[in-house]
Length: 293
Image 1 (tube, helix red, strand yellow):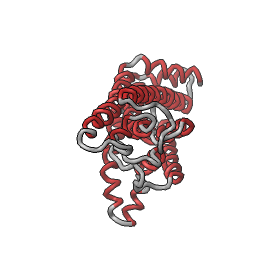
Image 2 (tube, rainbow, N blue to C red):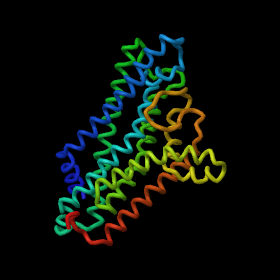
Image 3 (spheres, rainbow, N blue to C red):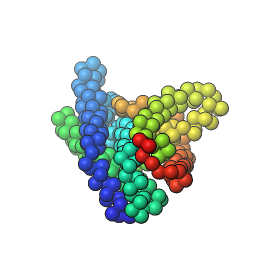
Image 4 (tube, rainbow, N blue to C red):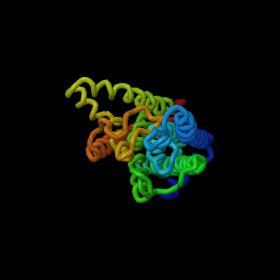
């Protein structure tokens, strides 16, 4: 199994898509810190009193910026992971390497497990690298603004809280990655896996607030939406902070209408397991062929 996982990682390292997605993530982190943070702060302080609590300052100033980076990173990172997942799964079907791997003695469960673990490994490294670069951007912006770089701040996260914040954001990406994995395994199509997940992300960001405005019945359906539950984990990362600028299209700041974080954790786990079960069941029971056949 370790050799199979290593082979999956080596295959994706030779493809340009991984590096394009990485650069897109870095560009998003740069926009978050510099454009929606530092540049916005320069503009704001010319028009209003500069004091603690200005959203743009909290967006770029370390360590407050960590929650904003993870908020944006989870929202758009879900899409980046979905595209990467769809590509890694569907390419083997289009090239016929799935049939070749099974002919060499791999079981279907082994093949799909190695594929999934390879995707997880590559996605983790890619997203952590993007986050690390975003943190560097924040440190530079904080220094340029003349502020001290320290965790000893009012209502800011402590150094001990950062690993948990990262885990929350990463956990909230998992259901979207599993959705893309499931769609791609079922449809053997990069377009279906990536586009289907994108459509879902956009749709839920529109539908969730509408359902919340429909009363108890609408709220019951709202509580089943992946993004609504993911926002609970992101809101936990922003506990105690005032509003920050973010590229994520959702409400997740203090006072946001989100479910209990532990209930949300269980809902996201249920979705991930359902998508996983469907993927393995479909792959085990159907004929393996290339997309050209």
